[in-house]
Image (cartoon, rainbow, N blue to C red; front, side, top):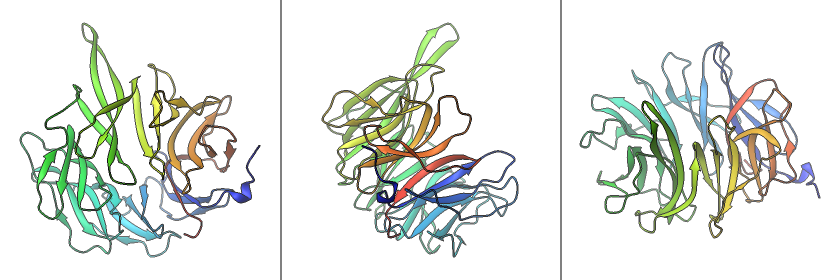
Length: 336
């Protein structure tokens, strides 16, 4: 039985993608195809990587409207756009703390790419990581559920205590034998993380391939569990609001298109939920966890659009009909 579009509530925040064209941020009503453009920039200016505050009232994003890639905030309706940073080398991957009062991001300084923290009103910008051993690239910060620490990528996965500055490797004692770790997600209750680990595998002389595996573990790195294996690409890992289901993007073989997979953490195998699509990516759960939004391209069609579907992939509904490419979805509640 198909869902009534009028009963699918909330807004989906996303950015358009392109090269010579401007990149802008939009919202679309999840059930009504009503699109609103929030940023408006000239050609070749990018506004990208929107992340929504926990209360759904603010968006933090990147914009190059003043020359370099800086961090900006705005209200969920696009008003009160404010620049927070003034860097020489650009700032990237912003995210809100669980209470919405702080924003973490990556920015380059004399030591390399480090994780920075700033109040959501733009005050008190400061680095919270420093160069450790040979690591000069710290990126993709994610707050823990209690807001006291930030997990980030630095070859391995590291965690920094915001108040003390203490840095630890999550897998200091027990580490899977892989070459890179990334795309970490924290469960809603803060007890677990999910992430992908990449292994560079030799195929012979001067030939190799990367293979990615999805793992879960406790926040301290214990109880490491492999939940999928053998993907050539894997990304966009998301926990459902109740923490019982994982969604992620994966491609099983070289040259195969990306698809959305979901799996219950008590099951053994991931399920491809976008079989009827040529490709799909950027999953985002609805606030109640009953549906999932994604960017998909149907077989035989040239354009990609935003769809929502039940978590098992049934009842897919197209909710955009615009001639732009789309990425970075976030589904926020109806009252926002």
